[in-house]
Length: 229
Image 1: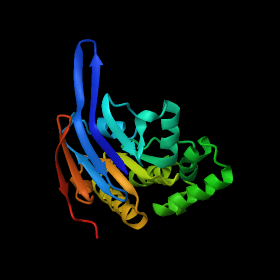
Image 2: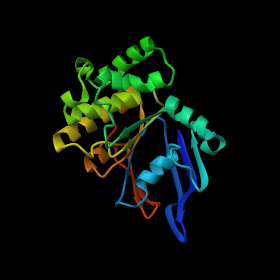
Image 3: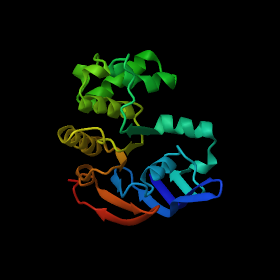
């Protein structure tokens, strides 16, 4: 599904050079749920951005579904992300003037999908996260946990091969965090969705199949949790 080989990411500003990723190797299997953990500044979000093609690597190789991202133009990578990837961020990034369903449908409409098809897929995605009864509500009428469920539905609406999460429970209290963790795990188990989640939240990490621990731009260790039944 995802394979990173000897990946380096170096940022240079003037004479200052920062090695954010240092010869990193990682594989993620189809249907696997992986947590990426580590101290602030260790390269977790940089790794997610490089694996998903949001940022270019300095050297090495990143392949998704057997396709080397380096062989794609920026437009091709954007199209690939739109078709094959979903993203869940700490910030909900929901448009306040749109209903929950309209927010979920928006990526499909921007990709040229018909309104009828977008409506059908948007409703299906909201059902997957248990929010179909709240589909007409605006974001301000929803709790933080419900808003994050809408963002999860939006990430699923294009039926992605892989979903990337960057601190998806970062803005939630412990109760809502637990509900989101439970939802992500059930989506993984019930639909075989592949997740790679950057997190500081041990509650999420312990629900995944594998924890990848990073330090100083490298993978320090990988731990299999054995939680999948």
